Each structure stands twice: as C-alpha cells, then as structure tokens.
Length: 157
Image (cartoon, rainbow, N blue to C red; front, side, top):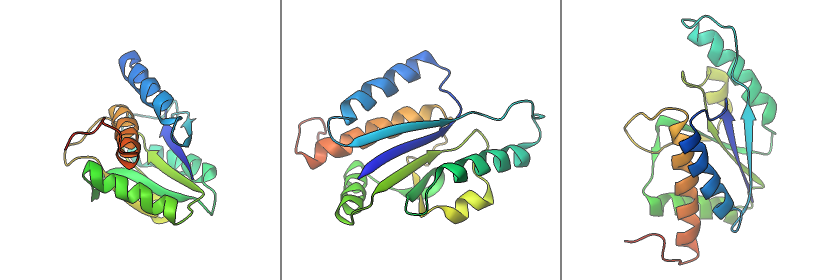
C-alpha cells in the first residue's frame, strides 16, 4: 500500500514544516509515502468560501484515481484511538488497498462533490485544528500506528 497525503496550500509555519519533515522521514522506513500539495486558490474575495471550496474540490478530484481509497480529515469524521487508527491502517493493507489518500482541505473544508467521492471521514479530535496544524498531527499519528504494528516502543499504553 502507498499512502498519499493530499493537502491544500503550502505549510507556511516553519516549525510545523520541520515537524512534518521529521515524521515523513521516519514513515518512509515503513511504507511508501508521498505528499501532494495543491496550490491554494488566489485572488478570491475572502467571503466567497463556497467558491473556494469548489475550486479546491475540483483540484482534489483531479488528483484522485478511481481505485484510490480516499479519507477526508474532518472534525465530523470517525474518531479513532491510536490503536484504532492502527487497526484501520492494518485493514487497508490486508485488503490490498493500492493507494490510501488522506486529504486535508483548505480553511473552509470540502465541497459536496469531494464528500461524495470520499470513502469516509476521519476525525483526529472533537477540537478544531487549523488545516496546517492537522498535517503534523496526521503524520505523527500514522507514524505512531506503524510503530504499534511493529511492536516498537514509541507508543506507551
């Protein structure tokens, strides 16, 4: 299985990018991984959230293949413990999913068409995190899941 993180816009905070880089480097020891960054739309009026979601949604859908399993990181999604996320990933690998795409949308979320295409939604907390901060959290939690799968001492229970 290959995991693709699909993100809208660059990570602008250097401290977040440094953390992402640490976990991406670690993850590459366990699984084929890529990050695809879709440029954020420019020159839109700030109040035109629906238009922005549609533009971002079209770009997301252009990057997704029919065979991909796509999960949106969304506060209303299925919530997992670290062990639960590990089981989720194990199930995807056991089912021979070729590419698992984890999508972090822009600041206003996803268009309806993206929700329709997705296989599901995953929540990392009932709290709302910025679309840039959740990138670091998903990298760390996916790394944690692989250390749990391997029985490594990173996760303490």
